Length: 210
View 1 (cartoon, helix red, strand yellow):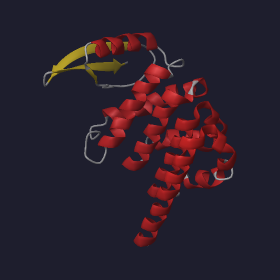
View 2 (spheres, one colour):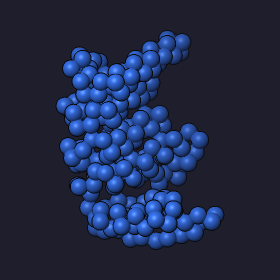
View 3 (tube, helix red, strand yellow):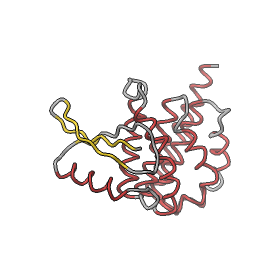
View 4 (cartoon, helix red, strand yellow):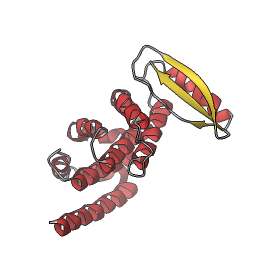
């Protein structure tokens, strides 16, 4: 059974690579052909499927968003809710792929994804602030979550409350060549409090969301 699962994962990996190459080359022109594959990848996203199935299905939709931008929204009914739920999946690989997806939504998706990006922030914050977020197993997923938050704040923030305060302090950090660290006690839309801390000779901006 394990060998069979490994073979299935290999096939999905290769298929994902092929679709990635086609999207890089043809961008949204490829979608007319991708239409026929959507039901199959939608099936792979379901919670009853294996970790590998869900991970690679998310990776395919990540590429669709990244290389076709707003055109990918035509498939949102198939992947968006599952991608959001996958941010809290028990598998780090699935969370990693889901977080990457929200990062490309933030950077490449445009206004059609603005609400979804804003609604994903609480779960992304939870990933970043989890006590084991920097463990070997979880670190890549955490890095993708940090990247997603940053991209949403910078490129697709029209539905994010208090964004002006966040953008101002991010700009301060950029000018000072500082690293941004998001540490969230809890999420809400009442406002932001900001505090600077010094650690190991690097300045981190800690954003406490209350």
